Length: 512
Ligand SMILES: Cc1cc2nc3c(=O)[nH]c(=O)nc-3n(C[C@H](O)[C@H](O)[C@H](O)COP(=O)(O)OP(=O)(O)OC[C@H]3O[C@@H](n4cnc5c(N)ncnc54)[C@H](O)[C@@H]3O)c2cc1C
Image 1 (spheres, helix red, strand yellow):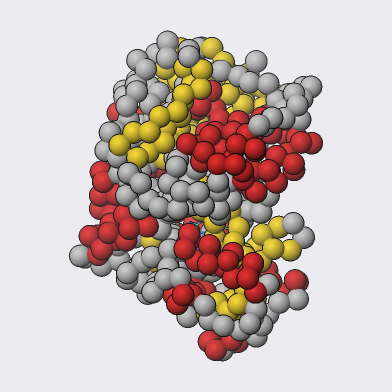
Image 2 (cartoon, rainbow, N blue to C red):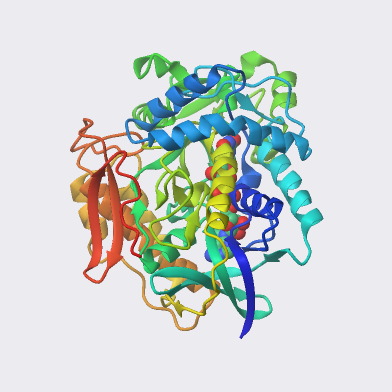
């Protein structure tokens, strides 16, 4: 089998992975960056609204407070502090790399100040292009980029992660590495209606869990309130549309948000999403209305959304747009500390794959692109701080593939049981007989299906065990908030384990 050796293996080429690789390279490290899509695939390039960072001196405390408010008691203080302290400088680095941010920040739901940097409504695309260019310029012996390389499993030696195995267009590949940094994005595609791209199959979480890492708070799934669903795909209408003054109307033409939250259309996403679902059920539809802002202004401010909706027969500036909630972001992930270290030696994680403690029970809008920068850089530095370790072959922690034909049914079951509203009966019923048939062979599709089935089961178990409502997790049989505890899951010699642990307990179990 073809084998590569490197100081740092980064798996995933979105904002977190690309920025981690560039950071490690800037320290002179030898880096391999592998991603299953072309470079800069993943959610990053689809991000519309922008990137949040304290905009002015003195905004750090307010940004931290807004982040903690959205997180409903489950943000990790050290992580939030590092984030607000460092995010602005990294956003400036993006500007230096050529991202042409508009001069003024905008407002989005849950933010007390206008601190969202954007480049119109295609901010993720601009960031992807800039990071892709920077990686391209650095590619050479010390930075190898492997597009189309699908990580199928991690490799362990004495409890330490020492590399990974890949399926690549040129055949199987093994990478032996001093450190492995997961930046594989979230698991939105576990749900039937999701704004996340097809590659959002939760691979990194599944790889880490099988290797023994702790996953945290998987039950917190963020629904974006305003997606336009057509032809089985959910098209996002950025939150900035409400930030700029767009209003929500029910099918009776009533502006209803005052009945749900004093912040109206800019209430936290979980509140707006549940309000929209309730009004859709009660009146038959909900519409986003921007007509009062003027059609020309709307088209100039939101050219990407305008162009996406036009083929669907909708004009953003002239029509009330029918909207509904869709899965958008997964708060839970591989547990890390504020330096990006997971519970397994040799394994680091950053971006949406990680539960860094920034988002708690609900992500504040536009905090995720900047999270990728701050903790991509931190995780890369933590990995390099370990110093040069002897490279080892290790043992593969592999799992067989599953039949993707059963995925549509599994997604419907999960969507119905672990959607905007959950209860014990629905979650229990979805868990009974959960799973997919084994698949012959070893294709990427079969391995992704096995990953989705595994993470789906863990989401259901966590949602069932959390007998309270908080942030992105609403239990109709337990509608109140209880004690703020994290839900951690891992696997050891005794099988699948689940526990609730207090905030601030840190990364509890280094197995070495
Ligand atoms: C439509 C949309 C709009 C959004 N708008 C905003 C916004 O305005 N502001 C904001 O802050 N956030 C926004 N978000 C969220 C944000 O885009 C993501 O959270 C963020 O980009 C995640 O970055 P990441 O680097 O962690 O993962 P991603 O960008 O998803 O990248 C994951 C990478 O991992 C690779 N990968 C996955 N599995 C494997 C594997 N097994 N082997 C190898 N490679 C693998 C993929 O190929 C990809 O390169 C939006 C999300 C969506 C879907």
